[in-house]
Image 1: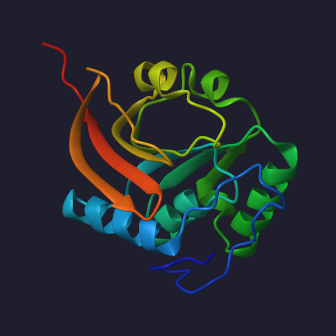
Image 2: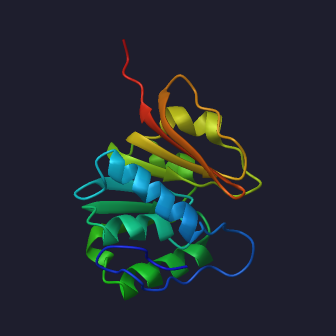
Length: 174
């Protein structure tokens, strides 16, 4: 894994050992950021990287000029690898790493511009997460189709090999 663009372009990222995390492919990540760019980009944005693993998505946001990223990862080993990546790339001043279950960490979290959600293979937390995610835009990444609830309006949907990606905007209450 590597950072695709921005200030840390080409820098390699370490990934936690084992099958507990699912690294996003460079192809899918590049596709997501191309779609985000068409929607205004991430420069100056605040973001959440849920189920962060190595932090690939959030670090890409920081490299492309995001103001601040909060990484949430429940596994302590994965969180340490993430912390090492953030420190090595000199993004610690714009990053917050929370070691906690996602549902608990986002409860009461301040609103952000973008939330990236890539739950582990065995989890299917979408229904519970959709209402709780405090973001204007949602980027969902999974190995199966992501069915949105009425809380979200689909903006883009793509498939990259086995990866399914959806970008949605929070629905405005009537």
